[in-house]
Length: 255
Image 1 (cartoon, helix red, strand yellow):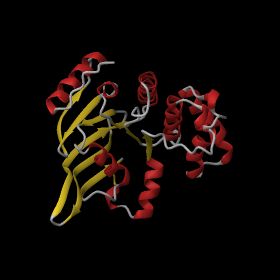
Image 2 (cartoon, rainbow, N blue to C red):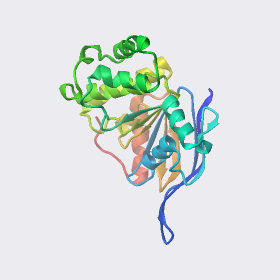
Image 3 (cartoon, one colour):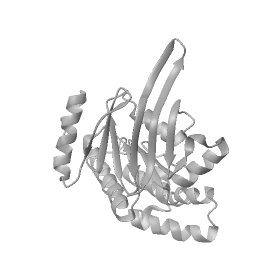
Image 4 (spheres, rainbow, N blue to C red):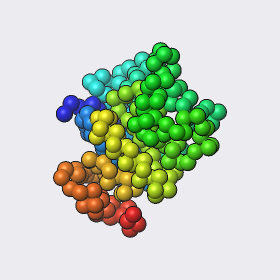
């Protein structure tokens, strides 16, 4: 498999001289095209900071980040904004939908920003909506649909421009267990059927069990990783719990 993302000796500091916090401490790893990688760790381990370093680049204190062979840490501000828009898709815990736009318009906005011709937008929106099972809510507004439907809309918006990498930050954090499972099934489906590469930060072992590989962070470094391989999701889930227990963040709520 081709390497889509590579982090080399990433460091991130907060504060100033005399009061410096090292949130990320020399992290290096790679993600290959078509992988579904989970990032886990206790609160304060650096997992969200690391995702922010990948998504906003300019916040990196030291090190290099390569996306599809391009060293994005070397890009100028305008180049970086364009590069992110064309190559990254985002799924957030709080959806980040615009309440004044319909579901259709929220998805279409991602195409408009990328200067997709108007004649192509309708077909693209309906195609991705059909894939994610939200065709029947396209004319509704975010406040008229469920949390799970909002998050599937966010997924549609994230993947409609066919980005190289999807960054998901606690995507099930605002959902109930049923909606969470539906969303995770959707994410697994777009990963396996559409070949979408996903990097997902989560604190939840159930969500992480959908990934094919998991990196565990502790104190800003990669503590260990596990690979699903031929394991069933149930077996993988148990391995995740074992590592979390070792890290002091074990969960006992098995759903």
